[in-house]
Image: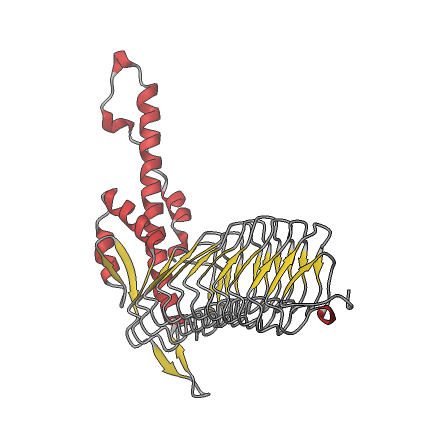
Length: 383
């Protein structure tokens, strides 16, 4: 094949390597279904390449296969492609459109790094893994669709994607990795679904347009600097209220942070009040720096930071935990108090049901109180 008369427009019908392709190639079409793999570095640095037509039957695009093809405007992956190698389209700065089809399972690290003109990407549900830094530096990337089915999204995948405004994280991806959205300065909306478990350090660092985010009940840990310097972040909503760990530096530099909200506890409080135990509101007022307004429980974040012995600013997370524990003890007390009342009513109803209708007793005589020791056992956690 090396003896063939090359021109800027070529047709290929075998698996090829870099030594087979002229530097000035502009158009490439794979004409045969017998091409299963584009080998590593096959078209690397072909700066004049403007069109590539891939064949059905192609299964793998090798590492660096099209890296630095700066004039390539688009690429359409056949449904037979299973893997895109690492750095496959690295530095394709003119690439505006990429079509990925069902059947693809793996996208290697740095695959589309610094594709500065890429505007949107939809990840098929067949993809199981997106490697580290895959879309790092894609500054025009404004629309990303991630499908359930994904198992892993690597670190720094969307680092410095400054045009990205919203994202919905798949429930099947348990970890939000290191620096995944670091520097996404226009990211305003983040939807995290139940299933996410860990938010790793720096995940949303410098997302300066982010104002509010809800943390699902499945999250068990938030790493250091996870939201560092999110200067417009005002509210964090925690669906889970116990059994998770938050780094003391998770919110450092969040100068606009006003409050943490706890919708789960808010529902429990509302149920207690609707059951007639309105005195809980007075006792809530006695817990310093806790707000109960309009059916929403929140902890304000005034005087949120202090300087530690190394000179770094850290959040007073432990103080917030203490306040939350007091609220939870109070809520649990009233819930159990309500439970003993319901138990007494149940006993009363049973006695009424067993009373001879021809010999009616005074209804009050049918009352049965839960014995004091039983109540003490139910409420003993207060001691």
